[in-house]
Image 1 (cartoon, one colour):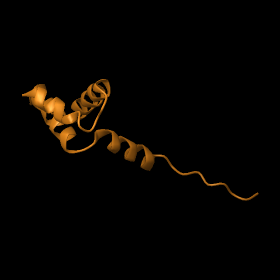
Image 2 (cartoon, rainbow, N blue to C red; image 1 turned 90 degrees about the vertical axis):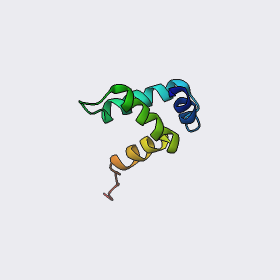
Image 3 (cartoon, rainbow, N blue to C red; image 1 turned 135 degrees about the vertical axis):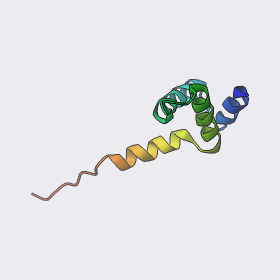
Image 4 (tube, rainbow, N blue to C red; image 1 turned 90 degrees about the horizontal axis):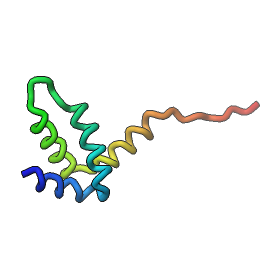
Amino acid sequence: MRSDLVFGALSHVSNRYQLCQLASKATRKLHKPNTRLQDTTNDVLCRFHVTNPGQAILQQTQTSQPIERRRAA
């Protein structure tokens, strides 16, 4: 049942609103055209149960920003 998946995903995300936002973004990115949207959502919630979705976002933002270095004048 989906409620079991939601409660499993809440083990990593404490805020339900944040869980809904992350799940909707992940569902949009992972959805394949010829599959059911419900199956994609369930797959996303299963992935959130195993890993911390907020931590993956932090790692992506840290690696994508270039580091500026100051040069001596």
